[in-house]
Length: 214
Length: 214
DNA sequence: TATCTTTATTGATATAAATCAACTCCTCTG
DNA sequence: CAGAGGAGTTGATTTATATCAATAAAGATA
Image 1 (cartoon, rainbow over the protein chains, first blue to last red):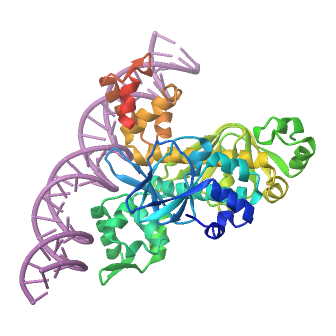
Image 2 (image 1 turned 90 degrees about the vertical axis):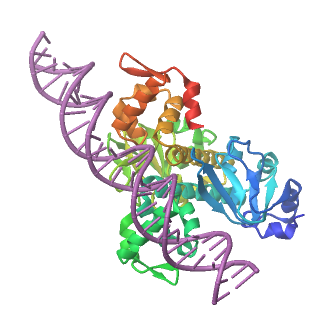
């Protein structure tokens, strides 16, 4: 069971008073998940307002060749798929836990009734929605606009942890095959943009890489 | 100059009273554009909350080969790129008028100050933001997830006007070359999914087409 | 340390779609 | 009605990336 004190630490609810937190708790329920478990499937009806409390949730679509296209990974204290709940439409993508974790499921109709008039809550919801627009825009900027080479360049420049991942995993994040990624990194090495240092690549010419995707 | 009566017809503002409409008018300004004119460029700083009043505005990105990738076309009474204004980030895409038209530019800081507490306005903003998430999701579903054949199938099933357009234009909408589109339509004809009837294609087996993208 | 297993690299080939080029068919204009 | 120009079609070629297959390197296990 979730305590009021835990709720209080969540930025979404930081402005709620004791009474409101109790109310919120009464319309919510915590559910735990193991790694790999599905939170919801694409096209399912959206049931509750859902917030990740612990663990990492990946949001993904499946293409006709059965490739997973990951749109985003959510970390704790994020609302997930509130769009589908607000609009009463089916989930546009699936969600699965990449680690053990838990979510808070909030009864949306009651939440709307009790909390929508609260300006702070409204503001937090705006923030959450605009954040999601940014994530989706980023998916488009990466996957629709750029080719594989530019995609790698952009991703390794903008994500410090990219080159710390296993090649395999990075390839999946970038929506390309490990072979393609390997070839592109080899090309970047030849061009002197990156360097291999005890089995991990390192950027040594960020400006050059930047030119590739801008 | 825009009149209060015109403002009143806009769904966003339908719940505002006379005094509020006057206030809104005092922090806004109407600007007219000719076909082809740019409303804003990608990476420009977002200045005002912008609403299309007349005409069609296309939102697009340019890929490295100089292809235009149109993310959405906005018709009158829609807010454009409010995410960028809310977040104070540069526009994530460019916007241009596809016809003559006009926009209402609203001073965002004042708008926030005066109108954010209004529940009806907040609700309309939610609606507008979730709408945008849907548009972007659709771009991803079409362009990242599906290949050309499935893309054509989906688009002609879901957009009645698709087959009324010039082939050339449809190809641009679908982000592929006219040659590719022509070949795909020929394939659909051979399969008996569509038919050419005095120089325009017509769907005759929608179920079969649906299978291609689901 | 030797061996097993997973991950990464490399090369060869296949595939989807773009590009280039030629041709056909409308449609409009004078 | 002729013919000019644009739009659509078709074929040949190129390009980017996936796929398949073989090998190499790295890490794990005994």
